[in-house]
Length: 228
Image (cartoon, rainbow, N blue to C red; front, side, top):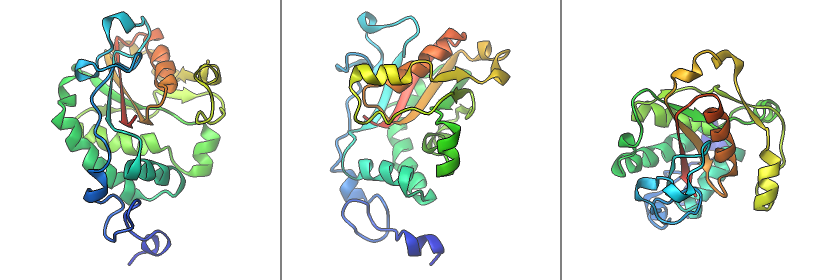
């Protein structure tokens, strides 16, 4: 038994059964999502943005696997606030096969890069990691996508999005992301980017990040989250 097992025993984050943080019995109780347009959130084939919803600098589509509830919600929360590598490994172990099942590998074009949503440097220093980066790098490796963890920079600290209205969320994120200057000369070669975050709520974060990428020459930006 390691130190981690003593301070954070490996029991299901929902039912408490020993052995795993995410047990299969609790995972099957979480609703698997039908893919939907990231703007109107109505059903869409493979999650593509509806033609009437398309925006010049917006997301081209979204892949989200589970409803943000039950053991999935508990796992995401635990990764953020009670960090344990095993939870990241476990959730990726369930997430990647589901991605392949829905054909996510076919939704991206050649020269695709996965880019995690960044967090502000001070928060990352305090927490010690960025959960979207930790999960994203495993997903990218398993899916055969190139991983660029520092393409985007978060310029300032923001309020938590959780309790803000849709309008307030947009204002909270306005101008918060920028392109890392070291990529200025090469970003035009990135035809396709998969933006990864843990949860899609209103989508304000992914949409703001997509705007920055497309403003800098990226042709196609696809959103991807574990839950919605």
